[in-house]
Structures are given as structure tokens and as C-alpha cells.
Image 1 (cartoon, helix red, strand yellow):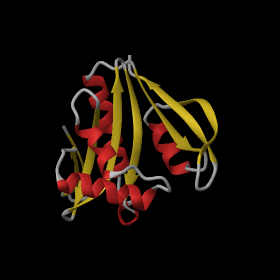
Image 2 (cartoon, rainbow, N blue to C red):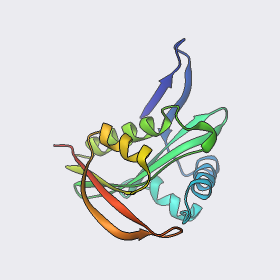
Image 3 (cartoon, rainbow, N blue to C red):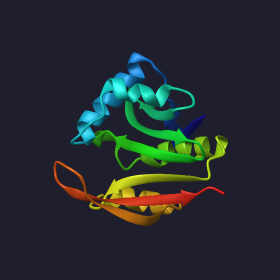
Image 4 (cartoon, rainbow, N blue to C red):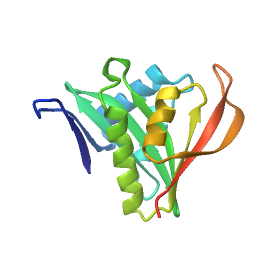
Length: 160
């Protein structure tokens, strides 16, 4: 599965591909974790997103490097998005949307009924992206995040 974004001339700027258990994908995703999150997943933990039946990840490759990635765990009939991260130099180019579209398509292919995620209450850009994709707020986890302490908004989208 792939998702691509094009510029005005139709030239592909990046593409979203399923994450594999390779040094390039795992090292790239681990680097994004360290850049984007105060409590990053380890490279070893990211391997879960390459195990069929457990999880899936997608990466956006741009200019020869991993510029964005996102992951989701699958449990029975529900997807749980773990993280979506975009390198600061590549933000606002549609990569997070491409990753999210790939994750949603994958969840549908697994016959998931819904997809859920948590997002920092202050992350207005991510919340807007998720709302545009059909997610709605269904709850809040008080002081869920650390470094800094912040609430998480729980968002869900029904697929069926």
C-alpha cells in the first residue's frame, strides 16, 4: 500500500510505504521519535509495527530519508494509532495526512470497526488533521503525557 502527494506540476514529492523490519525504516522512525516526542519509542519497540497480525507502520520517504512515519496496533476489531511523526523540516507538506490515509486503509482491510488514538490537548494541528479524517473526541485522559504534563484527548472514528 502506498500513498503519494504531488506538487502543482504532478511530480511526486514523497510516498508512503509500509514500514519493514529494515535498518533504514527502523532507524528512520527511531530518529523521528527522538526528534518529535519527549518519551520516544525505542527502535526495538518500533519492530512491533512490522509484525503482521500485531501492528503496522507506514513511512514517507523523501530526498532519500524517512521524513515521516506512523504506526498502529491491531487488536481484534480495533486499530489503535500509536504515533504519527513528521520531521520538522518536512511539516505542512501532507505527509501526516498520507500516513493517516494509509493507516485507515489498512484498518479497513483488516475489517476493523474503529480506530482510536490519543493526542496532546495542545496539538491543534494534529487534532485538526484527525477531525478532517472523521475522528471525534470521545474522552480525555487527565495528565496522560509527561515532559510536560498534559491531558490526552481520546479520538475515535467508526469504520463501519
